[in-house]
Length: 371
Ligand code: IPM
Ligand code: MG
Image (cartoon, rainbow, N blue to C red; front, side, top):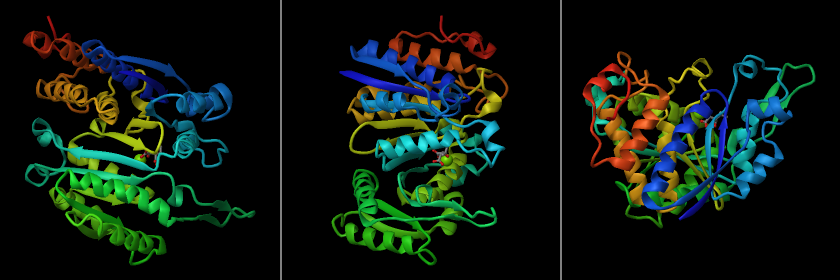
């Protein structure tokens, strides 16, 4: 298969983790005889530095002309600490999501047996957790009107949802539940918000077409609590934009590191794949960032094009690296591997899994992995 992939490394650790994801995709292309071509473009703080615009027209064109987008991270402390900044890196990402109409953000979460003890939560609570968050991505409070009064003392952010915006992601979430454990939980705040009551009505109505799926409702405050009290109760979580943003970061604690969590953003055309972590500026250039979230996002990209064996190869290699503790410091504090070394291990393993010899001494020394 030939795939044109737009690479948007972005800010902070974005370029380092995306480089490893490309390495792994190159290994897959070599092994299976695919042709993946990559076109790099700027977005975020780096794009503001270079052009004054967080999403330059050229970047958007490259994305629209690609089969898929692989995105790194966005954000820079010089904007985070300046509430008066007129242009912000995040605007680039939001505009890109809107322009590509990426209305569904899919964030899977599962636990790795060897990592369970890394979580701050009790092993018995998180063991067996396996759910996916369907987060609405192009509407709600993120995209409503934002105003500040002339005297600077009153601000407004408006949350709007239309039935169509709710319906299209709801169908995707129900279909996902049908091929999973057949349970869908709508997370909202229907006791307070009109938009949430519209979500409930639409989702209840659509649910009648998916009678094999059990539909439940949960207020977002309770959902935040249930996620860490009993995460195994969830299968598919469907929610609006901001609740999904908050709950997916909370959920990452269950996996042991936010550096493990991948996501896909789907619309009707070009899809985008991105780790859910941010730009982690403190780690920039230190070769310590965990590349697994970006690499697992690349696996979701392959799934999207029905390259199922290829995606599985990546997941098996990731599993192996975690088992062998070939991991960056967030997962392996005593004897860690660099971002580059984790990428090297995965690509070598994908190309040569049968015949790979692990040099235990080298692994223990945190040096090379393969002889
Ligand atoms: C995410 C991020 C973004 C969001 C930011 C960077 C705008 O937190 O993808 O979860 O809030 O959607
Ligand atoms: Mg977020």
